[in-house]
Image (cartoon, rainbow, N blue to C red; front, side, top):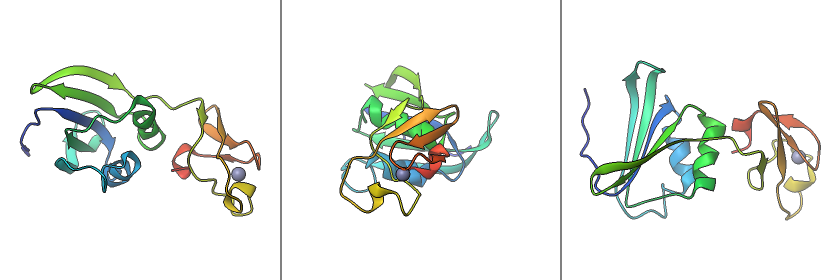
Length: 142
Ligand code: ZN
């Protein structure tokens, strides 16, 4: 079993779909702005998922809004908040009902041709762009 130094204060995101860890770091802004240490474990064996990625962010506590974006890419992910080397909170990520960020994959959508807000609404497992009215898979938007 692979071991990485436990973190004292920060966030551990577990049960990420294998290969999606890098995208999640980017999504959280942990790839550039973050100053603490960041660990990404890829293709860890998992009973639940077969293989999974794990992300450890030292001294970094993303907002719930940001954490819920993880659900777009990896809905099984679990979040552990660590303080004083102990897990003080565990939570699941949930796909938001409405999204005010992201990128519409339709190249002729007005949101890709003018500076404007993005707006997607959840419909079942998909999201509909309020502007061009097309529906997309959640992971196409981030
Ligand atoms: Zn659109």
